[in-house]
Image 1 (cartoon, rainbow, N blue to C red):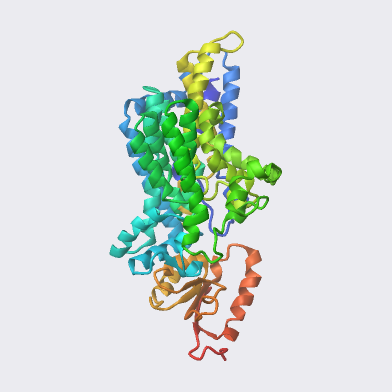
Image 2: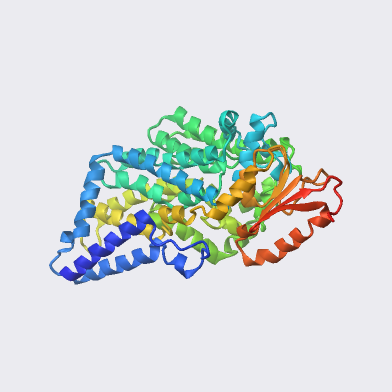
Length: 561
């Protein structure tokens, strides 16, 4: 047993090093799904470690497990963290810096950052007198797509020094800030317990939060701390503050007011505040419906109505067809739930698994998550049934809130009922819950942030591309690839190649492309065909450096010779 204990300690040290450094990082020639990249996920290594721990525990007849070095180290760390609550605030601040660093690194390496360029250009336009418009989306007011007026607060920073880093910093800070009110909630529920600082740390490690940070920028990703503050105020019966935080959240995306409606139903059902609950359910429910049916259409979307109802292919693409589907068309709802069921089960595993499924032990509080979970389960689109986008950020606070109460219920039930005549102390059950939570978190952790930070290291080619982009005149309109568009967003005319300009409008002055940014072999043929067609569309090549190409529209706009 001494030998196995030593092996476990060395193995644990390896896991710590892997988490802190990211492990071996292969070169950019290895695709994300290649074996050399996949092997540095945390999950398989943690699974092997837990298997060895189980073997030790089963063979430990003299109960010496608590003497193993890594167990003593974990115990000391838990005692230190529990005795120093301010450490949670420090960890949150450090984590926000890490999240920002990873997002910035991805930006510097011309990584895929969806919608970051859209909001960057729209806020730059706002600071220059063109209210919330982006040529990347057809030169429309973005409020005709999503109702997120609170995002416009960031335009003030663009008036001083425009940069996409403003958006990345705001997102990283807000995502990490969610750990603070979650800590207050956990501290009230588990006073003096390791679970109090553990829950905010698990939140910072939570895969959907880290993926939201990596997935470009979206105002909806700013909502977790607002929902956590609202839940904390609800627990403390600070109703005015709760309504304020819910109101702010409702200004970050059109679906956010539904949180106020379901909290109102919860307050009504539990009898805590029946009158307030009814008023919240009606008021926030009306706001929620109005956002889709009236507010967004008032900003004149190109189709004349909210454009995203078609995400639910089994439901009728209207407000009533989606929101009232459980009553009007339950067969369609059932059909949506069973479509791509394997992918949705994997999604549920990634959402609830990192918290060891404790959320399921508090169904009344898990009910608060239902309006945000249901769209993922009803859609058959891949980007809604994965945690690798920003769409799970609004669901996250309610998953953690219900998991916290689920752990509390498990400890209370275990201490009172026991199992097969045996009762455990609350302290033993608390330690078991902490182990289960940590195990679930790291089993589904995937790649640690240091791995991604190092994998997105800029290269000499990236520097050559940046140098070429610095020569693009700021007044020139440009058609380019998505990865490049973010670096050219501070201009009125910007379009995604192969689009060369607005429909029926003036074509772009320049086309800027880089073959090295094609991340799939299947893209190469279509890309080359479109490049070959540029001379016939009135463009001449003015620069070719390695894989970097710049085309300029000829003065006559006629086919280049």
